[in-house]
Length: 596
Image 1 (cartoon, one colour):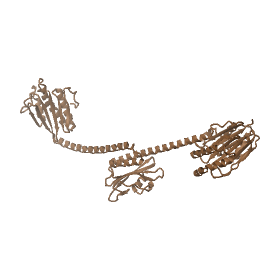
Image 2 (image 1 turned 90 degrees about the vertical axis):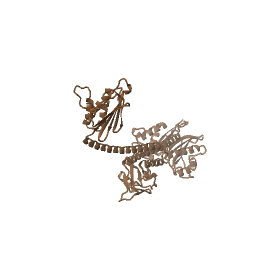
Image 3 (image 1 turned 180 degrees about the vertical axis):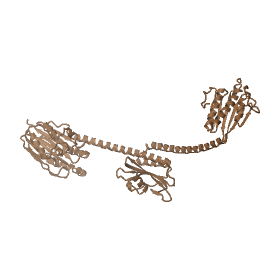
Image 4 (image 1 turned 120 degrees about the vertical axis):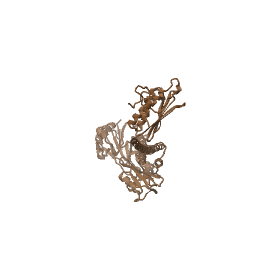
């Protein structure tokens, strides 16, 4: 005997369970359909945990009963070609009802065992022997055969115990379903909050909306979100719901003991009101139960999320899971915002530096003017992307040329901006001032207010090459010496005087005058040539620079040759130099007066 149903008859109809203890089968009046109904009935009874002996008895008596329904059908009457089987399992019995529309038969008063050579009667005998109650009612609207078999006491007891266990299981499943429903509500709240968070403009609004959602999901009466300030390191209240905000404090000095313990232990702290403890005053809200959860970025404390109830009902596992989920979501949002703000600030600084670098490049001549009987070359390398050094060379009156070299105190954008202002002032004055000293005195008066406000100054040297009078005149305000060397090696140094430009409102400056002869070489430089730097050669003192310059001028080197030799001396083209940053901006200008 097998429990696997045979291949269904296409004429057979459907079977369906109409309740936990009831089952109905409907089909065509064929022996194959009868077999299908019998197997289906066995499976239904087996699902109700009837023992094998009961299953075998019911399969046998239903096979006989169903075959009778098929046996008496009239092939000429299509309206009789369908029948039904109903099964009901009760606490102590199983009842079956077979309804057919055949011509039917007369149920005998007694159904004994027929002779061995008899072709009929055995089915009724089996049905009678295997049932405790049977009734056959024959009528025009359908024949109904009702069969009932009582279950043994042991089986009844076992089934009753099984039903109790099933009932307990159903109760557990109901509780799990409720918990899953609560989890679904929590997830729905998280999804809704995630969608709404995209529309929040400020972090405070984001935190407030999160607390509102958490209060709804967990049934909390109040909540507070505190974050660690990246500037002061203090715990500061970002958002609060149903209570007042707490004052800022250092994380390990929180006035709320559970909050301090959460930070110290890096673990959740439960708030529970018992007979031995009093409720916690948390932002002027008396909390009887709740949870304080610290959240981190790696080992770095980011903040504390607190939820509380004014009733003594502790948070369950689902509430804790939701609180942790929201805290993690907020931590990622906070990190994302801070990274975005840092990126914006870095981008702004980068644009500012790029602008300053553009300004600084504009201070340097794209090419030095082609001067009759003169040649000039320059070099400028900044310690940072931008700096405060610049040099310039321009015609002066009709008698010669003016050169400038300067170093604004400091580095970066501020130095670059003041270098641009200083250069503009110097360029606007040569045509109205007849000496370097008077030009710088006028520039000092114009620039004093700006430099004083910014607490900056500039060292600067301005020289005039007067071809008409064959003189070189230099005024040096706190700058490195300007070196003037004749072809025979006689070196004159225009030494700096105090104060630098920008420290006095109405100063008076002096000049150094040197005869201009063919072959004269001029070197003006900034202190980057004498500042030490790793893996770069350099000059120890201004005297070293002067000594080196005198030696190379005596060789008759051109301005370009002097520049190349100076760069080699400084090591600017060496592999180690490229890997070692400058300590200070490095700038110089070389001018050669060549014989006609």
